[in-house]
Image (cartoon, rainbow, N blue to C red; front, side, top):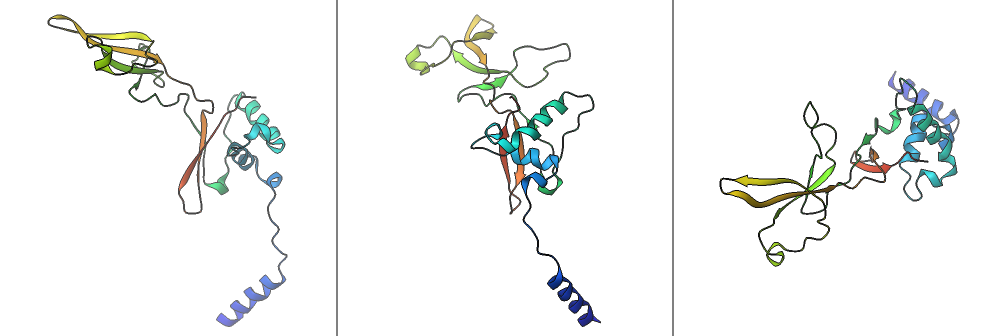
Length: 180
């Protein structure tokens, strides 16, 4: 019985049509979007094949009930989105304002804590420190020397990303934008 099954499998595969390589244009819309979003040099904007599926995506995102097209074969899911880039070294991310329900959204400021009583040579270089004083500490003796200075947090040129697993299952992040 085992020999019969093995023979049938071998004969079947011997007469099967050859497997043709897949073409990008034959991919599902979700896989086209993923493939184009992962294009880095040039970005999808510079790849003629990518303009139609990405333009279709941008238009579809404006429609009510939009659902992101998924490429199930790639195991990547929906993209992530991060509006802001990391703050420069020596600063931390913070919020510019608090709403009625507390801090909402992504932190949109980079905050640096500065001791304004020390001389500049003791503080170190304060390159790019122009910003808004958002908080000055007050103690029992009145004004403190500690100020928190906020500057706008840099925005990402490519705020969307896909984490795509490679052959070993390790995810690699691909950043992209959806501007025309």
